[in-house]
Amino acid sequence: MQAVIFSQTGKPTEVLEPIEVPLPEPGPNEVRIRVIASPINPADLLFVQNLYGIRPRLPSGVGFEGVGRVDKLGEGVTMRTGIRVSFTTLGAWSDYVVVNQRGLIPVPDAIPDEVAAQLFVNPFTAYAMVQDTGLHPDQWLLLTAAGSAFSKIVIQLCRRKGIRTIGTVRHNDLNEELTALGLTELINVEEQDLIGRVKAVTEGKGVAGVLDAVGGHTATEAFQCLARGGTMFIYGLLSLQDPTFNSGLMIFRELTVKGFWLSDWMRRVDSQTRQQVAQNVIDLLASGQVALPIEAAYPLAGIKQAVEHAERHGRHGKILLKI
Ligand SMILES: NC(=O)c1ccc[n+]([C@@H]2O[C@H](COP(=O)([O-])OP(=O)(O)OC[C@H]3O[C@@H](n4cnc5c(N)ncnc54)[C@H](OP(=O)(O)O)[C@@H]3O)[C@@H](O)[C@H]2O)c1
View 1 (cartoon, rainbow, N blue to C red):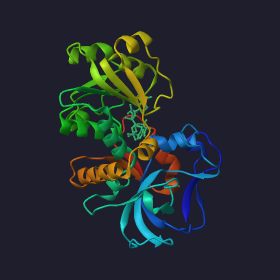
View 2 (view 1 turned 90 degrees about the vertical axis):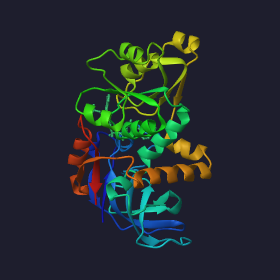
View 3 (view 1 turned 90 degrees about the horizontal axis):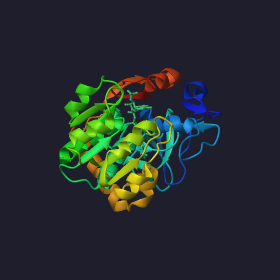
View 4 (view 1 turned 135 degrees about the horizontal axis):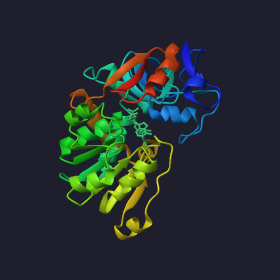
């Protein structure tokens, strides 16, 4: 079978390669899955560059989530073979993966493969982070990198809750799409003054929360848009640059800056909360109320072109590896 691996960390287009590897066998409490599709997420590319929260053990597989069909059961597993499951593991960019049964969610027929492949990383994070903000209807939430798959889900969840959203972008290619999803205000940071526009839109009050994935200058300015008692959640490293926080603002407006990582959230919350969030995410995706668009699909053998496409500006959706 084929799998994408890397033997040294570095630029993904240079170090990732599809190779032939033996078919893996499931151990106790594990299942083998015939993979159907897996997305290319920023976390995968950070992992290959050794910039992620876990370090690769080389040579390493890559890809943290996907959808597939259960193909073989390990000892102690009672589920049916053939059922379609979303899974989270390391090494999803592969014809087959072996996954602990705890990392599986059976998916209803109403969720297409393209959506089921992306079920864990962005929908879970979006759902959990909107909950963690504790925002109420009519409060303002500022999202940096508003065109990302993650932000598109947050925008749709906030619209349903009546939370008003301001999103930053760096080009105008997605403006219509983001407005149609329910983004209340859009700010192109290449053309407009972020702090001045947020002040005008919120009638001088500022935003109650910021979700930042960009860092650097954009996050520095987004922090200054917080209203008294506001919180900035940092969950991404897109610019690979650190923001600077104004200590005076932090003290005299009692602002909070917090990190968020889905892996830690999964460990932090109890199993009932995890199951509740999973059920809510499945219901939203099965009802078609939240869309997760795809821009293109590539075979494993086309991994370099797929990654180049994933790194392009102005994408309208995810790049999938279809296996
Ligand atoms: N902490 C967690 O647990 C967690 C979980 C899920 C996702 N995330 C993070 O969430 C973020 C979004 O993930 P995703 O899968 O939704 O991404 P995605 O769909 O691949 O989209 C990436 C977006 O980021 C924008 N972007 C890239 N580099 C940028 C930069 N330097 N400055 C401004 N915008 C930039 C791109 O816009 P352009 O069109 O302008 O290039 C694109 O809209 C990532 O940082 C990811 O790591 C974190």
